[in-house]
Length: 312
Figure 1 (cartoon, rainbow, N blue to C red):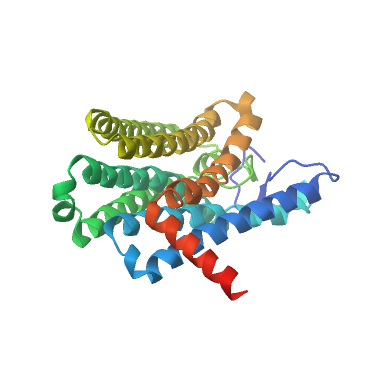
Figure 2: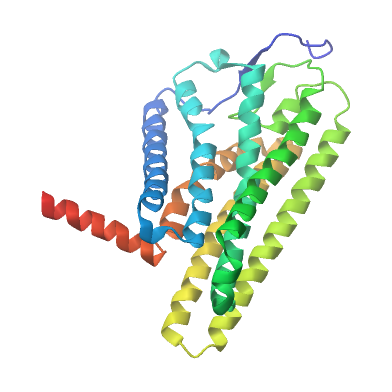
């Protein structure tokens, strides 16, 4: 079949490799993780949208992060959990469904970088140029930054997947826990040099721009804090920057691993683990690190919890 053009629209997805004995524990673990991610991220969006005291540019920009985390987690975890109890030879998916899943997987991955960049820019303006913050971070600027992050993600991923779906197929197995661009163009027996070059070049550009801008921004914030006289406020700001950078590094390493390890088949198991971790760890940590470390959001959660305790 590898030497013939494959016309069937049904593909076989490798999914998670688990033993029958471990299928239930793995399912329960993934379910708990998924519920936590959904509840925490949806809760943050509802809180910010309903509380007038949180209607500020910083919080509106922050809403991009839970929205992206909800999308990135939902696009793979429910199907992964569903396939755990299926035989590996019965984990079928249609080609259009696979393309849609791959599309949102990559939009999530790219938007992670862009959203964190605009959030870092907001913190930079707030700490390094506090007197000009309200003049710079207007509602119009928030809309522009958010639209730019999502627009660039959608546009570039559309080109990425467009180059892939033009290819004919001679294979039918997705050698990954879920569908992504590299797994899709590996189904083809045609020359995929263009796909590889575009994917690598664009990935390197996004990663370089993302890594550079985030570290330069937080570096300048740390410099301002260190040289400032308000020591208590500065130590809090430095701690916040430190935790933000730690989560960013986790996201960056897991994302880079599952993208680049596609080029090295001998590390396929490491790639599969990194790809799943990328869709679980950052979406689980982001509400805690970016949400609860924000003083206003933390206070609202405490007030809501106190009211519930008093009512009960």
